[in-house]
Length: 115
Image (tube, rainbow, N blue to C red):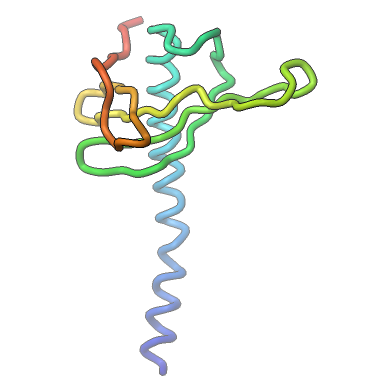
């Protein structure tokens, strides 16, 4: 019984590190995605500073996530805040549109333009 207690304590001790890592990865990915989406006009309007990401999955090849934006319901009314599903290839920071149904990249990749 004490081995189970030790293991449980160990797992719960590591849990904040995992959550912190996910938050850090999501923040880095989202910042990169927001720059690429804005620079390449992938959103239907300028959403600079309003976007946020929801991490879906991370593999060796891609980080897949939904990009959403903070809505002002009083001004915009109800509806979806989804900008799109994207996959970022971390090796070269290439952003692809992601087909959530087929779980595959769609089309050509976009890169962050130099400032």
